[in-house]
Length: 198
Image 1: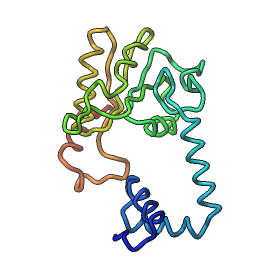
Image 2: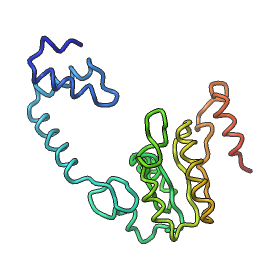
Image 3: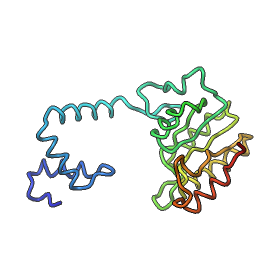
Image 4: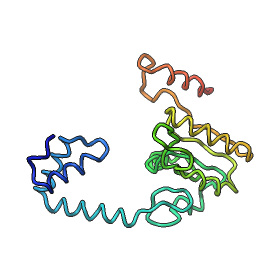
């Protein structure tokens, strides 16, 4: 989309919106015009963004996003302190919590090891993870089954196993309602690895 014909503030707004993930130039243009036509919506959105930027921080223990420190999950008395689940992003904690199945605590890495993108262990929250293992007996790796996720899981397993900590991985395989015909070989192989007796 050519922004040259727009007034500079509008062109800047479109350019700014198009930098958001999943928002291309055309969608950014539609959003910009909508916000100009709905000044109250735009004002409320701006205030909400500023408030979130000011009030949301990383939990000093698990590195999840929170408005209180430590976060409610880390402070939860009923949480199993011997069980720690490692995830890539804060939104992964929300996904796992929705199941109401995991009773331990979490640690958010804020990414995965990706040499091609210049992300090594130093750019993640691994050093903070290593400081909170005193009561931990099992670490559950719940990183995504990508090449980078697998590399990160293996790296962490090599760090944690010598400490006498059991390292497990969430199962991967066919989703409910999935069809073998459309599944790739890796997914089917993982489903076979994770099989259990019924």
